[in-house]
Length: 380
Length: 227
Ligand SMILES: Nc1ncnc2c1ncn2[C@@H]1O[C@H](COP(=O)(O)OP(=O)(O)O)[C@@H](O)[C@H]1O
Ligand SMILES: [Mg+2]
Image (cartoon, rainbow over all chains, first blue to last red):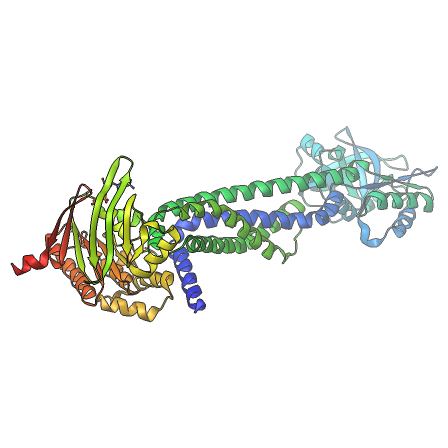
C-alpha cells in the first residue's frame, strides 16, 4: 500500500522536474558547476603530492656534481660510479656539461657540450622554439644569441674559437631550436658532446653535471653524503632553492584549494537557495492547493526536498564526471601528464552536492510550509 | 427534524477594523444544496474558507457534523478538510505540471491511496476519459473545471464547496458543470455554491444573500418554484 504512495510521490517529483525543467536549469547548472569544481579540485589535489614530486624536479636539477681535486673535470667513469649509487628509478635526468668560450661574429659566448636527452629530462621547463637537436652538427642556441643575430630554427650559425690544441677553428651548425630559460642559458650554444669533441677537442670530461632525482629532504641529503664519500674526485651539492620551497608551496597550494572549494560551494548554495526561493514563490498556489487537499507541512517539505535531492544527485553525478575532465585538463596543461580516475570521487561528490542542496533548500522550504491554504479560494 | 451537517452560530471574521463577516448564523441540512450570493466583497469567500476548514472565525462557533471546527488546531483542520470536504474553485487550481489524471490522484494521495483506475473512472464520469493524459494547459477552461470536479468528488466527501465554479466558463460549459453538481447533490452530497448567477442559484433549494458581511436574506427557492 505504502509502495503505491511512494510510487505516486516519485511520479509527481519526476513530473515536476521534467515538465518544469527550464525553471530548474539554473539551479541544476550551478549544482553541476559547484560539483565539477569540487570534484576537479579534489582530484587534482589528491594527485598533486604525486605530481609535485615530479614537478619540482622539472623546475631544474635538485643536485649538481662538481669536480674535486686536481683534474678539474668529471670523467664519464666517475659519472657512472655516481649513477651506480643512485637507485635507477629515482633518476629522472642527468645533464653533463662541458664548457668553453667561443665567438659568433666576434662577440663572445659560451659553447656547451651536453647529452641532449639528459638535458631535456633534467630541465623540462626549458622553453624550446623549434626542436631539440637530434643529430650531428645541430645546435640549440640561447634566445639572446638568436635575438642578437636574428636567427630562426632551420638557419645556421657560425662559431669560431680555439681548440684544445691551441689551433683556431670555425664551424657551422644548423640551428635546430632556440632555448628560453630566463637564465644564463640564453647566452649559450648547446651542441652534442660528440660535436664538442670533434670541434673543441680534448678528452671527454665534464665541468659540471646537473641531476634531477625524485628523493627529497633527508633522503636527498643522504644521497649527497654517500656520493661525496664513495666516489673519488666528485662532490655532490643540493640545489637548496628548489628542495626547500617544495613543502611551503605545497601547503600554500593546499590552503588555496580548500579556500576556492569553500567559496565555490557557498556560491552554489546561494544560487540554489535563490532559485528555490523563486520556485516556492512561483508555486504558492500549488502549495496552497496541496494544503487545501489535505497535505501536511511534512508532505509539502517532502515534495520540495525530493526535487532538491534529485537535482543534487544529477548535478553531483554530472559534476563528478566533468570534474574529472577538468582535473585531466589542468593536469595536462600544467603538469603535462594524465591522471587516473579516482572512483571514490563519484560518491563523495554526489554526497557533497546532496548535502549542499539540502542545506540550500531549508529556508525556501520553510517558507513553503508557511503558505496559507486559504489563498486558493481567494485567488491571489 | 433533519440532521444538520453544518451549524454556523454568530460568526464574525475581522481583518483589523474591517469585519468581513458579522454575526452570521445559519444551518445547512445533510444533503442540502445551498447557494450563496452577494456583491463582490460581501464576505462569500471568507465564509467558504471558514466552512472549508481553511480559516477560523474571529468569534462564534461552526459545527461541522456536530464537531466544533472553530476550536480545532491547524493540523486537525487539515485532517477534516482532507476527509470530508471537496473543493471546486473559480480558477480551477490544477497543478500545471501534472496530467488530468495525476491531478485527480493528488487528492487521493493526500486522502488515502493514489489509484489510477479509480481516478480514470472519476474523469470518465465528468466526460474526460479521452483527456486524462493531457496537461492543464492543453485543456479548455470547461475541461479544466471538470477535472477540478473529478478531483473534488474522488474521495466521496460529505460536503462539496464550490466558489463561483462557473465564473470563468461559457454558457455550454456552465450547463455541464451545473449538471455535474446536480448529480452530486442527487447522490446525497451536501453542496454549497457561491455564485453571481441567479440561474445557478435557482438550482439550489435555498439561497443565502450576503451583504457587507451580514446575512441580508435567506430565500427558499422551493417555495418560489411552487408559487
Ligand atoms: N486576508 C485578508 N486581509 C484583509 N482583508 C481581507 C482579507 N480577506 C478578505 N478581506 C476583505 O474581506 C472582505 C470580504 O472578502 P471576500 O470574502 O473575498 O469577498 P467576496 O468573496 O464576497 O468577494 C473584503 O472587503 C476583503 O477585502
Ligand atoms: Mg470571492
